[in-house]
Image 1 (cartoon, rainbow, N blue to C red):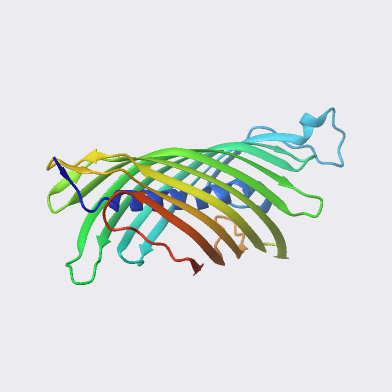
Image 2 (cartoon, rainbow, N blue to C red):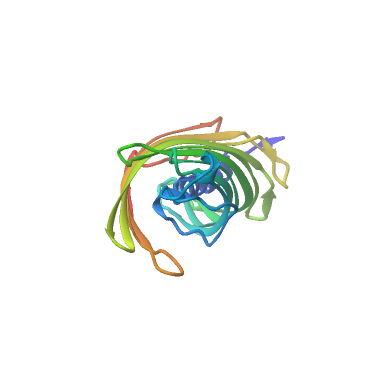
Length: 277
């Protein structure tokens, strides 16, 4: 049996899909408070206005279903493992919103499809590229509450799996990855006009991706590998609410603590800090 020297292409692609999923869930969970626009939204119950008579607390609660598709572009230029491609996602969720206590609790299912090219770049050696595709899912319960000050606090948890396909120089494989994430965030919203607002948000998050040992089509055994990322973010987003869609722009400061777990191969890297636009 032969063991592969380079064993981190699959887990790097899996990490990118998990990162895109985490960001989408974080935005999805607070949408009921900040007016985020889901492409499809259906409310199963109407909330009674505070000025109207109501029989009990249930008159101030509603259950809704919403779904939003999105595409995340991946352009990771951090050597020695570069990544280019995209992750297409569809998030669907059921949520119970309480107007009296100003809380939202729900559960979301996110489906994602990954298509990236992973390139290993080492000085003095020719680049080695691998095409990686994947189809994954994540189940994410969440809870959001609004404090008396108007500040939101959100808690998000996600567990899922990603079935991957890798191909490089005529050699293919079908590894599978496990994923998990946990995040706690706080945010405030400042209206600017009737149809626009700025959201300020800070988040502490942790993500894990692990790929078990697998065998390539040429019989080579690839060792198991994993990545762990603890991330602190702080930023702002400007959103303009239009009739059919809500364009937005923002800037986020990111601080990373990144580690890998594998017995061999070229190790992926993350910037210790960066700015996202």
